[in-house]
Length: 71
Image (cartoon, rainbow, N blue to C red; front, side, top):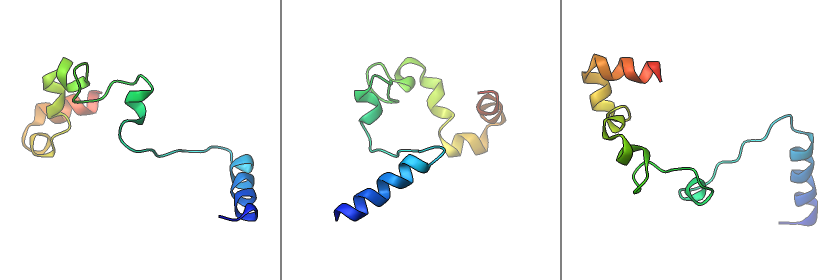
């Protein structure tokens, strides 16, 4: 990447009202945000929560849909 390209991207970020950064897996965990499957993960602490992210359960079970909507 050239210095001009870096300067151009830096200007975009500087002038932006908001910036969103998409990162790969592990970034949030490394920052202290609990993951879903780990030893202290959301699904480990609340196994029923996993069903809220299961499309088959969501489609088949009205209670799962209502729980998801409430959250």
